[in-house]
Length: 210
Image (tube, rainbow, N blue to C red):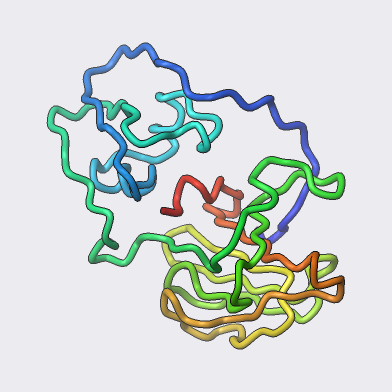
């Protein structure tokens, strides 16, 4: 469940195209700050179904104003940008620039998450509340690594840290400081490797992050 990387053939990414539907539904127009994860929760439609029926293979193709088809719904809902009361939303674990996206190749391996280069602070925070199920000072090439389980089939992975501030079994809240980015390599190569996993399978974090 906790394997972080693996090599496999990735199909060529294409932008979303206008789908053809055989089921009734409505169109939701994307607004700034909204995520597919949030939209799926508001409409109570499985995220994987939204991705498949709208033929979305690259989240970078999703734009403000884009129409997302919501199957089997008859009403268009307002999707707030503020976090849901249930605290289900994910937040960015660090402020910075994504230097390698999900599905891209990094050092001859397919990236299973996002590589994020810090813009200023090297502090890493929990993307979502949960329980630390894995904490290692040396997890292969990923170095100091943390895995947090969120209790609903989701987990998040934080790798390539210089310091870890939590331990296995500990409960953490969303936004809590858990680590500091760093590695044994040069400072210019410092970045956080971050993953969101669903039932052990790596997801594209862009679908969940605002």
